[in-house]
Amino acid sequence: GQTTPKVRSELLLKLADTIADNAQTFAELESLNCGKPLHCVLNDEIPAIVDVFRFFAGAARTL
Image (cartoon, rainbow, N blue to C red; front, side, top):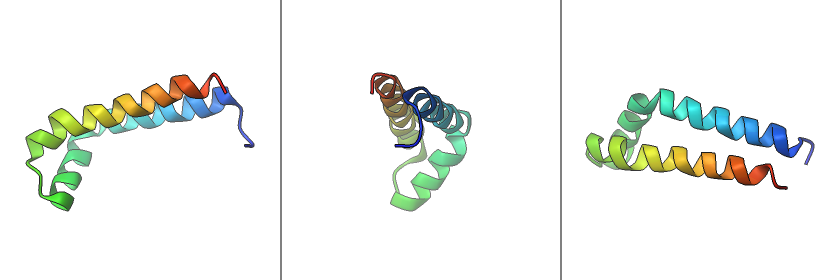
């Protein structure tokens, strides 16, 4: 790739932060998209998504 592992990690962390900062909006959109109750998306799925991006941000530094 054209980016360093550090840059990739920083981008993934920024994405995770953006999702976390806009959790309500993302949860509402996902709830409308798939029909799941809003509280399920907000309390279960969004935190898991943020965790995945943060995990891979850490992994990206080791590439």
